[in-house]
Length: 124
Figure: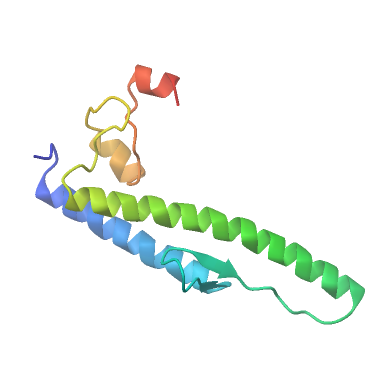
């Protein structure tokens, strides 16, 4: 049984679903979904032209897209994990000590997996 009200959990679920849509939209703006893995994307290689400076710009943009893709995929995984935890009644439990994470922390960071107790903060 959760320590949080149904209203609080529903608000977090809606927030997380909104974040998921935003992350997916951002990913789709520069990457294609990987048909072999549901939550993975493949950054598109930009095509600016055939000149040497354009080729360098393409490589630089692609490297930036790869980094952004990885960051967004990690965020997407965290959001999906939090949504699943709400469904499994394990949302808000600290993965280190098992205490409930404060509502304030979950409002600020709905994907939080650790509380702010001194022992949990020390060994991150």
